[in-house]
Amino acid sequence: MPIKRDIEIAQYLSKEGESFSISLTTENRPFFNNLPNSYYAIASAISLCWTKHAQHNREFIEYASGYIDGTTMRDQSIAATYCGRFGVESLDGALSNYRYYYSRVRNLMPEFNTCSVQEINRLQQRLLGELNNLRNQRLVSGIGPWLFLGPFKIILGDQQRLWNNDGINAIILPTGIEVNRGIDRLVSERYGFMEDFDIHWLEENTGSLLDGYATCSMAHNFMSKIASLAQASILHINSGLWKYGKQEI
Image (tube, rainbow, N blue to C red; front, top):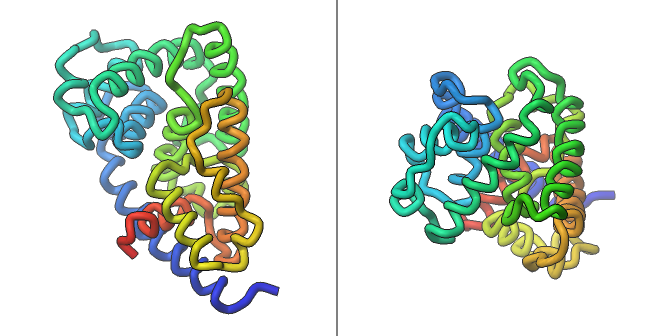
């Protein structure tokens, strides 16, 4: 039987997270409305800002979405101008690898504005297999679980029509530094639903893509517990934990 304190924090994270999800949607929707590039390429470009590989800047998102889509030539000055906390080389590598990876999987993409949440879930599983194969063949490097999952956070955030669909909670979302800090904070504050959580799961994974993805899945399962207590979407819990980790709430 969940205790009142656990339910209250879960509902608080959900409420704050939904507010943040709405603000992200408002911020990102103009890119999906106005840019000529493919939906997934735009989501990938925005996700690089979410992961702090790049600054959230219109010029960067316009360039990056076109570059990933294969319609824009490489501009060496962009990474240097708009790199985030991981530096120029990391951003440049992420863009190049996203471009190649997307060129190999673009035929798998659904129509994101009308597809079901189940189609997005199936897409995630298919892309995981494709990316794993590309990494094993050494055709792609640097795209680990965080960069692989990033676009799904942006896609689900943009597709408000899916927010109340039960199937949305099956789609694995990225954690990252701030979300990890939020989870760690919940553990240290001894909330009941975090009892069996091992904080070592949040340590940087240097193993295979599938190992890292499995770790993200374990964290996702605990977010699912919080979402269940709040009767909310994991998308909003993920956003709430981002704010909780930054101590904005």
